[in-house]
Image (cartoon, rainbow, N blue to C red; front, side, top):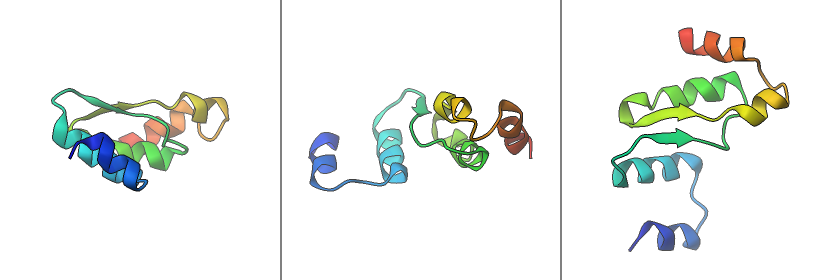
Length: 77
């Protein structure tokens, strides 16, 4: 059963989809569409060792949900 057929039966969580992709692809994965806060940036960064290469944060920045500085501060600890 392929990825597509499993996803159409029920809506998986973002974490389930990310884990499924990591298990099936050998290229870096970019998180997109789930970043709404600096805490989300930090949560995505926790998966760096498992193939997450980055995150798209444009809309969250545009909507002023957090600043680049706040996101970087979250990553720096």
